Image 1: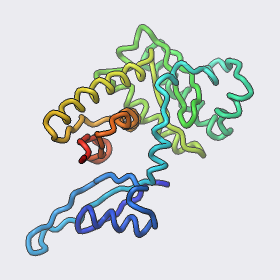
Image 2 (image 1 turned 135 degrees about the vertical axis):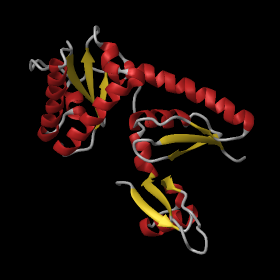
Image 3 (image 1 turned 180 degrees about the vertical axis):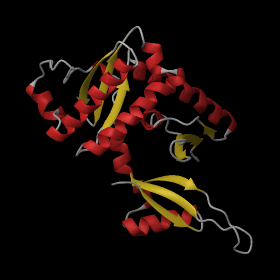
Image 4 (image 1 turned 90 degrees about the horizontal axis):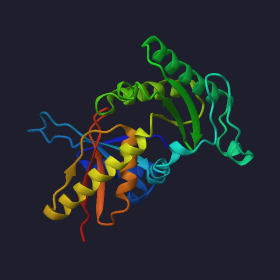
Length: 251
C-alpha cells in the first residue's frame, strides 16, 4: 500500500478517519504525524491535523534489511559486462526483470560517467538483495570525496539514483550506494546513537529527537528500535527533513 494522507480536527480524528476509510483497526496501521494542526481563534487561522498512514505489515516488510548485505555477491554486473557466477537458487530469488535490469544498468553507467567527468577513478558494480539494489563503488583514492562531509555527497547521489530508477523500472527496489562498507559502519554508528538516546529517555522519561536521516537510515534505526520492548517511536517532519522521535512506552 502506498502511504495515504488524512486530515482531521486533531490527530485522533484524522487517525479515526483513516481506520474507517481503510476498514482496519488502529493497531494494523503505522501512523506518521505530518502536521499537528492549529485550533485558531474563533475559527480564524484554523489548520487541520494531518497524518500519513501505511499498513504496518508493509512497514515491517520494508525493515527487513540485512546489515551484511554488502558482503553478499550473489549477483554482480560490471561495466565490462563480466558477471560473477551465481547459483540457480540465487538467480531465481534475485533476478531482475528486463526493464528493472535496464534501469539498474542505466544508473551504473550514469555513475561511471559522472566519476569520469569529475576525473575520479572509480569502478561501479551492483548486486541484488531482496528488495534492494546495492551499487558498490570501488575507489580507495577518492573514498572521502565520494562520501562527502557527513555522507552528504553519497546520499545525494543515492537520492538521484533512486529517482532515476523509479522512473525507469517496473518494480519497487531501494537503491543503495556504498563504498568501502560505509553503510555497515554507518549502521553501527546509528546503533550507538540509539543506545545512548534510549538511556537518556529511560533516565528522564522524556522523548528524544534524532537529527533528520535519509529513508534507508531511518529504516535501519527503526529496525534496531524493535529490540527495546519499552521504547516506541514516531516519525516527524517532512521530506527531506524527516526525523525519528523515540519515547518510553507506558507501563
